[in-house]
Image (cartoon, rainbow over all chains, first blue to last red; front, side, top):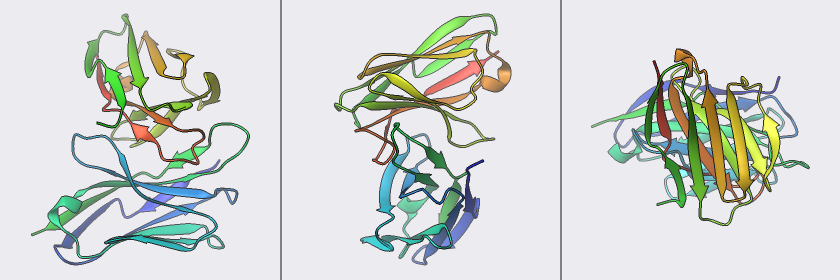
Length: 114
Length: 113
C-alpha cells in the first residue's frame, strides 16, 4: 500500500548546526508535501509545505526540497536553536475527487544540544 | 488558539463503557479528520469527512464510530474499547481536501482500563 518513510527517527545536533530530515513516498500521484512540528505536549502545526510544481521552498531558517523523480523530499533547518527541539512529521497528499489521501511519516525527534 | 477545540481533554474509561469525543472547529472549514497518535504509530489517520460525508475510513475497528452532523462538529463514539486503544486522539480540519494545511485540535488523552 501507499506509505511514507521518514529518517532518521531521532536526531541530535549542536545548537547552531544544521539538521536534515528525509522522507520518501510511494504514490507517484502525490502532489502536496507538508511538514508539521509537534512540540512536547502540544498539537502538530504546519511549518512549511511544498507542492509538486516547485523543487524548493524556503522560509527563513527552514527549507524543503522535493525530487519528484526519486519520490523524496527533505526538510532542512539551518542555524538550529533550542526552540527547534520537537518531533517533525512529513506527509504526502494528493488532490482527487474526495477529501484526501494524506499519509504521515513516522516522525523525527529532533534534539538541539546547547 | 487554532480555532479547533476538543472535549474532553482527558478520558479514562473501562472496556465496557460507551463514551464520545467531541471536536468543534470555528474556521469555516469543510473537511474534518480524526487521528490516533500513539508510540507505535505517531500519526495514524482514522476518518475523513468532507462536507459532512465520510470519504475515508482507514480500516478502523467498528468499536470506533464517527459522526459528523455538520461541517463544524465531529464526534467519535467509543464502545467496548481495548487497552491498546489508549492513545491521544487528535481532531483536525482543513479548508477542503488534504491538499491544504490541516489545523489540529489539542487532542483527547484516552486511557482504557
